[in-house]
Image (cartoon, rainbow, N blue to C red; front, side, top):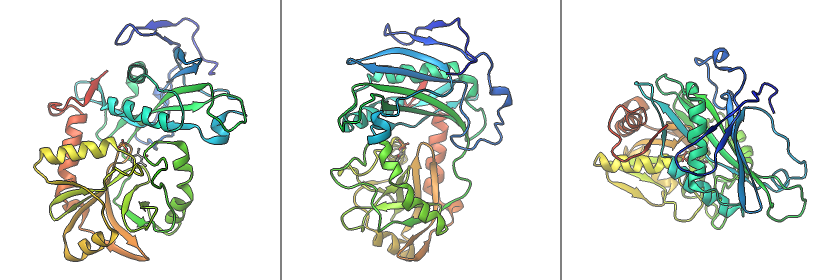
Length: 369
Ligand SMILES: *Cc1c(COP(=O)(O)O)cnc(C)c1O
């Protein structure tokens, strides 16, 4: 751990009378030397991190410590068999200086769905929320105050047992890191519709934010980038005829004036919190919403007959990332100029207004720290 620890710590009592978090503060903050005008996603970490260990059926020793390296057995199940998964959410600074975390309970729920699928222990929802609220509170000065900026929060769990047998580990670690971030993309995306490689199949674990899903996606994604694309859109494993989702965002379209997105009932698609949020906001705005299979040919047709008027990726890291064009079977199809799209502009404004506390939070999505 960081040599720059203070030995005197204090105890933090969060929310309810559950186990306390021991807080060891960094001797010196890195805040002053951080360039908030140049935040590359996931490269700058705030001063502290949260961690807790699981053994004998219990989460023990809740700690917030200075951000730094940890030690691991080289035989741990994580490194060999990928018993690891993560979450991603964000904290926002409001004009009055207060800080909110967006829909944290949804991430807590999904965290445990991922844990379940990977034979890893459940993390009590209360512990998930408390760990994040306490960490964001300790590092609240790291939440950027600039427009379209936020503090990205990365909770994750991984196996720690030193055992090479292919069975679930007996011990685990749950940690939380945070990173100040700005907009993920600076321009609308050229995407490739992937029809060779598969991200997730029915019966697999595409719905879990499991580390293995992302390692396996890197080669196809790199190929797409080498071909000049920014991102790819996955298609179904069986026929490669239907749209699934993007690398770390759900795919959404406006066709015939309706908001349309692939259904999630086959468990191959990540159940995005942003997806759910946009669907809710769309209904609030009076749009008709459809969750159903979307054939690639439907999108191709839509660009030709003008019925496809909006297309974007929706995710916590990406926010709403407009799709400029998509490529299918070597042909590129261009959509309406992103600057002239009505739905995504309205949805983004509605979303930002809630997250930055500009309008009343009528759905109760903001957790105030
Ligand atoms: C995280 C993620 C999303 C978006 O989920 P949010 O909860 O909106 O951040 C979508 N697809 C994949 C594959 C993801 O990993």
